[in-house]
Amino acid sequence: MSTYKALRKNPSAPQVGESLIVALRDIPVAALSDNMHRNTGTVGLHPYHRPGRQTMAGTAVTARSRGGDNLTFLRALEFCRPGDVLVIDAGGDVGNAVIGGILSFYAATAGLAGLVIDGAIRDVAEIREREFPIYARGVTHRGPYKDGPGEINVPVSVGGMVVNPGDIVVGDQDGLLAIPPAEADLVLEGARRTLANEANTMRAMKEGRWDRSFIDALEARCNN
Image (cartoon, rainbow, N blue to C red; front, top):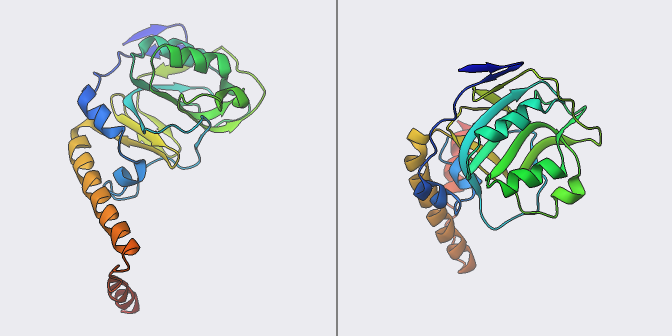
């Protein structure tokens, strides 16, 4: 750990293997969430980019900053490698934007997989023209301060979800989820089963043979 003026900085966690990240990009977040007890993930953060075909997935580099201040964000970019997701805990403050069109463009050209900000952004019209994933709590035209303090690569909370450095962060139009690397293979396997079951249900619906008897069991359970 080192100190740079008002910033506490820790090394970035090892990146998750590329084969796992590639596999997760083909899985909707909802299917992954169904295999994590449906009780984790962000609330109140929204996607502002143009929707792409794949799920955002990458290793988390985390930062905690004072609301409306982006000094920590600027420094944290140096801790990001191509394929990382930079996760910023700005305390949910929407009084001043942490990033805008220019810095998000830099993050995209540096090869980041996406940005997650529990705070505000600006230049939304520009951001919405790009597929580079950006999630935030809100929007304001008021720009950031650059005074600190902040921390890099510490546990953070964004949208009520704890993210540890090195977690796998996935996101699509439904929201965001953090997956501990040790659990990722099991979650991925379960999500693939979920998608296969959903495909079978859709096929049964189209063919007029959807078995709805499970509803009777659910109703009976509720009546007891």
